[in-house]
Length: 135
Ligand code: RTP
Ligand code: MG
Image 1 (cartoon, rainbow, N blue to C red):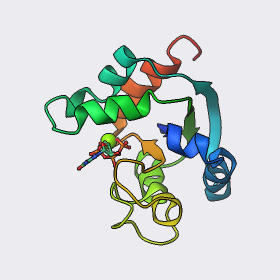
Image 2 (image 1 turned 90 degrees about the vertical axis):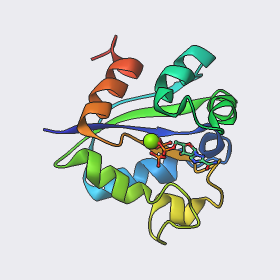
Image 3 (image 1 turned 60 degrees about the vertical axis):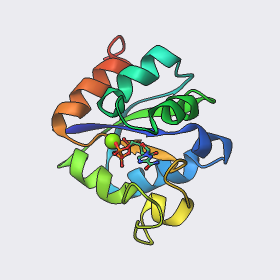
C-alpha cells in the first residue's frame, strides 16, 4: 500500500491547525502510520528542500521551516501521494481551490501551512529522512 509524507509547517502549528489538518486526512480514509512534533534544524531543512537550493526564496524557506515546531506524519492509502496533494491544494493558496487545506486555511505562498511529498520517490526519501529510525 502506498505511503506519503505530510507535514504541518510552523505557521500551521502556531495557528492551532494540527487537529483540523489531521481530521481531513482521517475523513478522506487515509491510515495514520507515524506522527511526531519535530523542531527542524538548518541542515535537515536544507536537505528537505535541496531541490530548491538555487531558487531566490531558498533562504527564506529554510528560515521559515526552522522557525518553530512542525508536525510530521506518514499516511497510507491507495494513491496516497497524489490524493494527499489533492487534499492539500495548489502551492500558492491564492490559486488553491476552496475545500482544499491551502484553499481554506492559507493566504500566502510563503506560509502555506502544509507540505506533501510530490512523488512516490520523494515520499520514500522524506519518510526515511524524518522517520528512518522509527519504521
Ligand atoms: P511543499 O514542498 O512545501 O509541499 O510545497 P509544494 O510542493 O506545493 O511547492 P514547491 O514547489 O515544492 O515549493 C516549496 C515551498 O517553497 C515555497 N515557495 N515560495 N516565493 C515563491 O515564489 C515560492 N515558491 C515556492 C512555498 O512555501 C512552497 O510550499
Ligand atoms: Mg514540494
